[in-house]
Length: 126
Image (tube, rainbow, N blue to C red; front, side, top):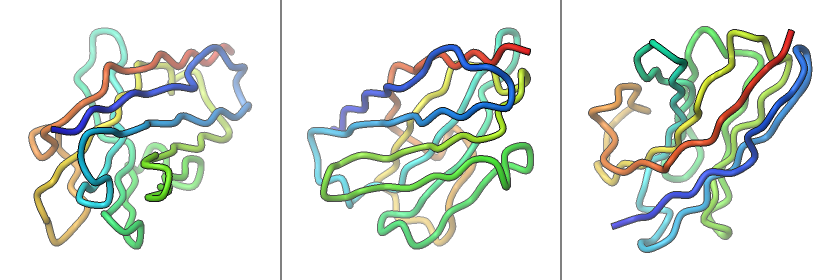
């Protein structure tokens, strides 16, 4: 079982930047593909970005493509989400997720990920 702990959330002004981190423990980190999801009040949890085990493949939702970058450091057991040009509609609780299943693509649905962090709040003020 892998444990995931997110950090880096907080309040930021529109147009600003923020970097989220997710530290993993408990299992070899390189055995997991990783994803970031977010959930705004009253809305379903949605895919934001994903990255393969080696970091060689990434995938982004259309709403963040070009503004957010996912990366990972397997030596530090950490996945990152760099968020630039933030908008008020990016306000949400951001969750880190992991899957040990070897998919051929970077998967984008919540059911594909078996492990979740507790979430970190990101609030973008206008």
